[in-house]
Length: 177
Length: 402
Image (cartoon, rainbow over the protein chains, first blue to last red):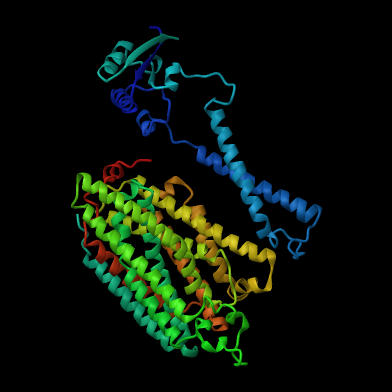
């Protein structure tokens, strides 16, 4: 049996969710969903694991905090001691209030950029990367479910499309791969 | 479904009141400060702290209305309940201020007429005399009464309209909803000004010589956090008792986010005020922090640690904000942290070197107020269906999911 990939095209995110629910409740694994905008509540239906982006962001933030403090300590305390606000106390912790704004900003900078770039890399959507959506209409007004027969050995392509036909599907495309 | 004030809750709040009153009385007997200044200062702390919770709730409530926020519709009755404390808090505060005006205590130095009199060589204070245009009793009382009247009138009106919505449907429901929306926006304009000026009047004028432009926001953010903590703890309590069945994890998560976010606002403003004063190191500005850091370093750092580090570390993750037990625990800690913050605002200025530590008097009066606050708020909750019957966004709130 040749491996097939099935694309079920919907016109409405709610219908897409109904379709995905129907497939999953029949034990069919949904490979992915393509949509012009984030479909609220689709993740738990098709069993996508919770994002770890928050953890990544936190790590980048902590890195930023440490780098900023290390830098400030080296520039202003160690290498070229500075008299800050008439307080010639040459210790990082004694001058800390003056360093907090920079540290804060650098933390935000690292967390935000790190998170955004990680997101783009993980999604393979960095500028210049080839588009991976199967149908250009999914960037406009169509919502597409992708199912692969290779991941659903117990179900034939006909059975899957039959299930999909019971939902308000707009069209169903099949491809060999 | 209406909330019933269970026997257990009644006993608990009564026990808090009795225990608190007993501890407070022992504390008052042991209060040997001039004019029982410590007792009066404590009354001011608790009057302001609990009034601040109600004000924070009123502010948050009108913010939700003015932004037409949908998710919070299910929990709006809880904030209306917290607002019920407003008149009582106002009365306690007025008692403290009235006693000050009559010379029964000297928390507010400028209330003593002698400081304005240049011929009185012993008591004349040129710095305070220079502030006479603002800090004089008639104008002070006009301001105080205007703030309290505006707050109470708006709170009563919101409550009345909210109960009215329950009886309406169709066009009149939407019309009334839009009226609440406009009035809430109007209230926010009043609150924007009053929240700053009331902090000057009731708290900053204790340290009469000192001034800080950030002080109003700092005080306001403290009120806001306390109100958010109170709100989420009450919702969790009600949920545990089987009320508010439609409030789901996402609502709790959002309320937890508010605790987290407003704690950060507080930390940001607290630090901004401190950092600028520390950096510029001008004698007339640093007095405030000298009195606090030099004499009460433990209290100061405890307040900063509890109100900044605790919510930051413990409430950062999503799981923490969705865990009721954990959220109640952290909420209780932050609640006490903000009460300590008000102590720190009032005590060093009001008592000077007579303030050594937090004793039976402070703890007792706080316990008494917690009990009274619980009684009033829970009683107010019994008077209307906990889940609003009608609201244009009720359906959306029920299906809130993040």
